[in-house]
Image 1 (cartoon, one colour):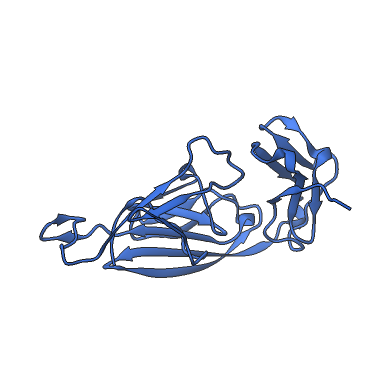
Image 2 (tube, helix red, strand yellow; image 1 turned 90 degrees about the vertical axis):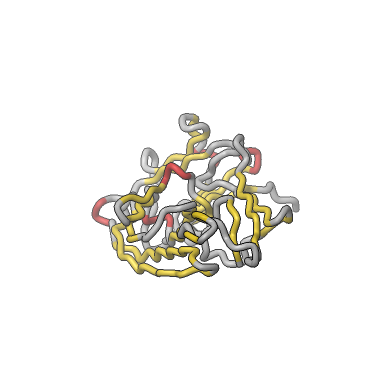
Length: 215
């Protein structure tokens, strides 16, 4: 028997720990921010996933659900900050305990050059985070799970700011996103390194912005 293909959306990174009420008026799935398509959606409480018919691939989908105050709990969220300095990543991990209704996450950060932030391996939109006064604030819910951030320290060399000696091995990285892509709670990014397609092999490390890197 053939089964209709479905798309899935991660709506709850802590299934079983934070209950989702799917009662009427408590759980909604919207297309385009206004059209209610809840009747076509299914929620898997064990996996924390919302499923929709495959026909909705490419549409802007919003999942809204309700958790009563009496069931708000504390969640472990790990924030990994990777700073590229002197040809290597220096990684700092912050183990936080946040309320399940927290809508932002803040950790210290030494630099904000070329900042890229992801949650559970998915790049966030640039307007969802910012750094100021030595602190990184990510405007994403704790329910979204672990966060990683990458930045770089501008090098000051005899040849000028950010310019590496000719003897250093240089890699030109280009990071692009399609301007017309649909936002599903994440964006898809594309990378090339010296003109070759590049892939991230460590999902715990956030991506990099375009630039020239020594290695």
